[in-house]
Length: 204
Image (tube, rainbow, N blue to C red; front, top):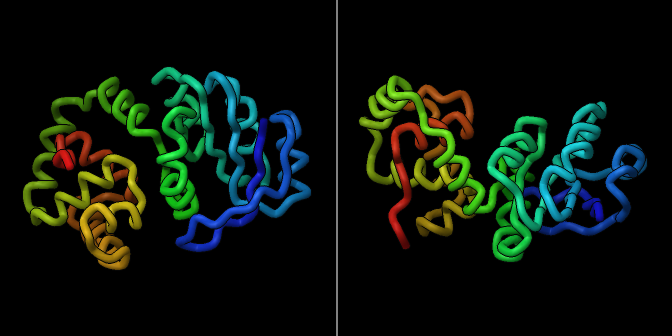
């Protein structure tokens, strides 16, 4: 079942379902409905791949968030490479959907922690890349390292703010500073550097 959501209010997780239909109807629904996000739910993540590819070819494609009963690391990587904004597991989606919608609305990727962990474990960085990343993070403050660690977990600014008990605006400033210090072109690039350098969040 494909659920089509109306535009998401900036910095809020307020959405409304404006249409529902089969994945094959995605292109037609996008053309006739003003929206920011499509949610595709299926048993296996690969079932949503044709939808992701079809939507990506549209002139103004909305983001696509896939919620799967089960998915392999390889299928998750493929979905992200083909343009999916995020992938959640059905069993844990209720606790992650709020921040995932916010992340997608802000232009970030959203992954269930289980999927993110599998991707990180399955894609070790080259030794030279790790050494370069270690050099880049060496000059960060303790707070900047905390923000970078959570950024590496795919959390949006609001979730990082809640975790560190600071304001979203402060997080935004930290992310901007991190990108400058790390010579990162985007928050996703900064997250990749965090993975390569082994910067991880401390257990709660």
